[in-house]
Image (cartoon, rainbow over all chains, first blue to last red; front, side):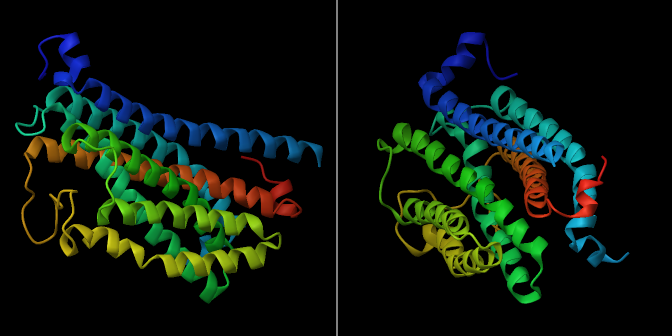
Length: 51
Length: 241
């Protein structure tokens, strides 16, 4: 473990904002992609049931 | 084993369905492990401070933004030469994930550029060619969506994908060919990596995780695409998981 405390970890030597926003955007984009594909699956299942 | 066995939607659909859970589990494990090493174990950088940690998402995203484009163009060539409909569906399913990683590479790059260069954006060759990559993905998807006839939209967008592939070596070599603010590559085939072993390890684990994620998501999307295009076929209507 590199960090001495939790606040050390969050602050990232003063670069916390840049680091956490970067990681946040990356995983938010991946989650959005998965969410959109889930919506597409549900809609396709609905169509299949109607046919 | 006959590899062509899985080149039809009917045989590929169940195979993809079986692979997805394993790929997704592998991606999750690798990404969590990569984040653990990269954010908790790896030390800081003496020049850039902890801002360097953006590397763990920025570099894998940038790699896959380029790699997925080349794979998409490869499927476009297969589609045009063999007239294989599954190849077109693969190309179409790769584009959104490639565009997503291009966007992530650009945005995380901006959040890295601001503290280290003092600017969110500069018009240097690396950044500009990566932005063109985003426009190529968007152009491909728009063209695909703009033409109603599936066979025509597949062929037209395939040609766009193939022409645009010239941009990928330009992105890759831009830091060599031009004087860029963006740093040169730390990893290449001809010399040993110019970064600490633990940082390299975390970055490569993240990249492997992003790779499995990409394959899983693309297979999920190609299954949705098969459902859209084969809606009136008997095999799909009778298909049970």
